[in-house]
Image (tube, rainbow, N blue to C red):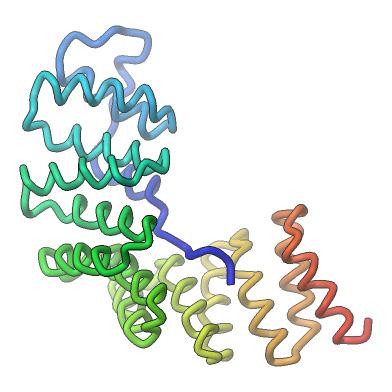
Length: 250
């Protein structure tokens, strides 16, 4: 199976706080202005500039927890997970009830392959907010990476119960079912993902694998072809399509 599917950090980032574009083209004069511009840089993907502005905020106001949070998010997006963890840890020290900080730190640990710490942080976020769907997904992913598929499915099912349109939860639960060789349930979940997002190439690919395992080669072929319409250079999908066509005899 392909690489683990993580929650989209960028989408979560947009929910942390609202933005303010009024400072574009101006030089900040206060910590609030540095923070606002740094936050916007982070959301626009200019992470180095975001880090520079947010570091300026932290130098001016060392207890600025949101500046640490956004700087941690920027480090995460750059793949500097150790610095991200350090910033999220600082947020937790300043605001022990910060569910976002626990969630984002858990996701950073997952990226480093430290699944037990990821589980611990996700569990803390869930304890603080039992209806935090993203935290159940993060913990479910950690369990899945540890091959504890039943716990993974339990957490992903809870996320779906909280948010019935949570595509990431359906996709990862579908992958867990596929790993357990529970093909019909895998297909059901992956079909739901495609219903929610018709351009979700990973869902088509995984459903194609499930159909291929069921020897429903015509449906597998259709799914692998869908992947290639979305990502024409996907060599793995090309290979699986060729295998399915050969098995089907066409």
